[in-house]
Length: 436
Ligand code: SAM
Ligand code: SF4
View 1 (cartoon, rainbow, N blue to C red):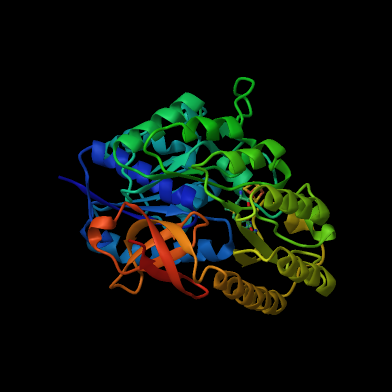
View 2 (view 1 turned 90 degrees about the horizontal axis):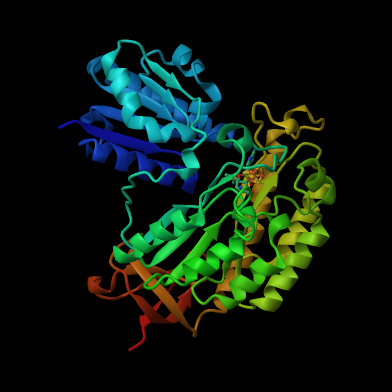
């Protein structure tokens, strides 16, 4: 029996694409190897959202050269966004690579392997499959309680810093009935939580029949028995509609947690980023959301050091964090990406300035998160126990607001919804005792 090992870089979409590749390979009779050195085929599922992710991939690829020299029969494949971006260029840098294919070519993985095995030349296929979004692929999920479900692929937004629309193509939504069937099957297998995935889930439904929008999809999934929680990422603030806010408020299974990337607090920078909303419009949506769902946990993405970001623009971002008081943020230094509009902008910011600003936003957010979390101490929260705590010795789970909670409890509770009396609240996690 042949074996494979997949190394995944980047976001949840890539993690989920790796689950699909695993499903296809297992259906082909391959088994999963825990180390690259033990496998007959190694797949690197790559990310090119920032330069750092790209560097990580190339150093991993460099390490695999030794393996290929020692075992020339091993097959090395490069998948994902760098494969799509670089295509044949990967072979000029690493001639020992056997296969290069993009994110929308995954459905043909088994055929591509057959072709590669029948020829001596490497195989490069980044053409993409126009029907990819309509296909249901075998999927081998790593988690038994929480599942990712793609509802759409690609992005039409062209934020000026971002490579996604170039590498993952235009927005294509899966059919509601296919998504519902997949979630039903997950419920039958015992899954309790689904996270609906897309670059901009709020605009789900483009190109589908009238009325097929994201709030409708949430309602359909909310009706599926045995699924206890519904989450989704990512929401573009421009497309956060009144109807979606009402759906979050009214549908009991939709968790009170929203990742709403703002990127910057300065209108000048938001405009240069082509984000299509102003600071005020964003803040108005946050106000409406909190009015409708007061307990909602909000998280965001921030880019510091975007071209043209002056000290006063950065200050606007810091002020926005103080005003919104997010539950958490993901902050990044602006990274130049090939083919994007922002590359041509003037006023590129020095790396040491970006570094300083990154440190400042992270420090501010750490204080805010710590202060926010204190309010949970002494309360009782619903927690879905999903495994073991990072430090070991305890079980861990998540609240509806997606906070990590560590509890002393028997393993038999993994997969259960429990109520926890929160006794301590730190920056990274809460802890407590199960209520009788
Ligand atoms: N579609 C989502 C959205 O609109 O926010 C997520 C896109 S991306 C996978 C996740 C985050 O990476 C973005 O929200 C942005 O903050 C960050 N990002 C994207 N391109 C970047 C770049 N060139 N430099 C730094 N950060 C970047
Ligand atoms: Fe990239 Fe913007 Fe699309 Fe998100 S919405 S994937 S940041 S282009």
